[in-house]
Amino acid sequence: MRRRMVVLLVDALGWELAAATPGFAAGLPHRRRLDTILGFSSGALPTLFTGRMPREHGRWLMYRRARPGGASPFRGFRALGLLPPRLRRSWRLTLRLTRLVASRGVRGYFSLYEVPRELLPEFDLAERDDIFQPGGLPGGTLWDAPGRLGLAWRGWNWRTPEEQGLEAALRALDDGSGDFLFCYTAALDALLHREGSRGAGVSGRLARYDGWLARAEEAVARRGEEPWLYLLSDHGMVDVRGAVDVMGALRRLPVRWPRDYVPFFDSTMARFWWRSAAARDEVRAALSGLRGGRWLEDPELERAGALFPGRDYGEDVFLLDPGQLLLPSFMGSSPLAAMHGYDASHPDMAALLMSNRPVPADVRHLADVRAFLEAEMGRLREGA
Image (cartoon, rainbow, N blue to C red; front, side):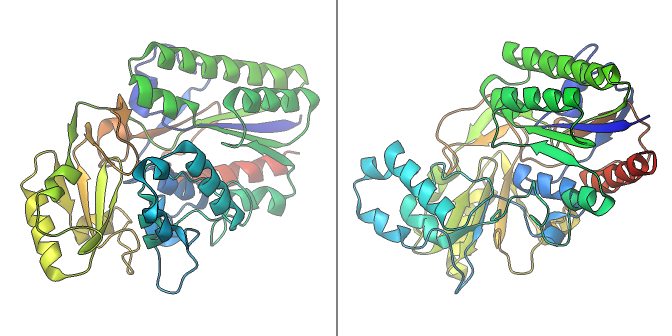
């Protein structure tokens, strides 16, 4: 009997959220809570696909510091500081700049968000290549395995709207194309940001995934084939309880950016590269007295797999407490209902793996998933 592997990767579908949804994915009895990484999908997905931590595969956060002499895709953007503020923030300019960056060879996912346009040349994008394709990450990834094993595979990711991707995958199951089918969606992530974990749209979206898994199983069974189903996520989401104005606290200091230091303000982190020791002392002292966050020291970054020798992602990192939102930030100036990117030990940050196939007990972290799925591909090939 022919076997078909079907993987649905739902961004931000946390273990706790799934567990709190009665009857969710009842056809997938083999379940594992997965520890995630400190950070966002920009680091979590590469960890899933490579089986390595951020320090090893080199991807942690969307923006990293531009290296001296490197070819930043934002070269020439400094002159944008001469434009009136309203024009710098216009969506038309943002669209044109986004297209320009993509034309400079960036094939991965990125957004300019609200990063000051004139500050962009200080940074680089970590995800230059398509991480959903063979060769998209250094050192080999999950996507190299089907070709090596002689399996036909098809995949849909963020480039395809969720509904279209899910329907295309079902059609492929119906017509028998592909031994291994993969579908990634970030629609739940966006919905959770807007509604929080108790949103009506969130429960409806979970019901959609539940129904899709049942339809996928039926489509394979109708062909007299055996369905191997896997539901996977990269992290969970924490409902937002408050906001921390890190940028406001820094405006009260005698040191200024970018003259005295270069900052990057993520949704839950503030990262810094220093131009002087005095600037570092001032900023660290100011934020140490700010409620709702703490400085990450090197031993903790090392344990999280995020201590980079070149300090590409920050010489110092200030992390907010779970449930706090850095507002405003370079990622946005509007409140959100839920966020991720917190301490990975928080229960709501945990990811998941569910399957109708046995899952070994030692699959406990995102970094364990690649080896498990590649082993499953091997078994699929042996039974072909």
